[in-house]
Image (cartoon, rainbow, N blue to C red; front, side):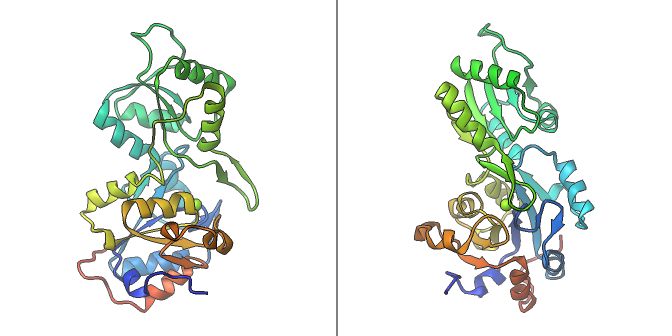
Length: 289
Ligand SMILES: [Mg+2]
């Protein structure tokens, strides 16, 4: 079948590859065949990889360590997370906001570092109430946290979330409930859904990278394994979309996807992108990471 909507020439012009991680460059702690070669050829050709993730349970520091442990050296500045995208937007509307967080301690620390005040308990005093309930991927969730968040949502406190993923992949064939599943829980309990969700498919993380590095849409490709987050975020940002079949999406899923949401490129794995770039020259204006 014809898998790619665009010629490989467009892919060879890309300067910045925004990479999803789980299911795209590794699964859990196992690097995919071709990942290191792909990252290596980007450096050789003056292109750059930026690691974008919806997972708000880990800090950037933890991601630096995780990638180091599987053999990839990446500086903290080369990550872009849904937590950063949430803060980027919260800073625009309510810097220093008071927050009730359903999230992990690393996310709590990050929000405090960014100048927000985190509340620990419920209060019915309107003057002391939080400005926002923020939902992240909370692997430390307790019934008490759910109860307090529901109380604030019932009181009408603004509701934001870091990302909409229903599950987070673990070992092959298994996953754990993610922030999207908790959104359904909160909707069932209170009728409320978040008014803003920072992570993919929102193009916010992609736009943050384009602003930071001064990039045009045809210089950017998002590579990911999920149609409704990775690929849709690229479509929403107007950049090139590349789906790899090493994670969630299957060819049958792609066939069943409406034309306007289909990825520009579909490859078995990241190794195929390496093979295409290997035959390419360095893009004009590219620089080493
Ligand atoms: Mg993924």
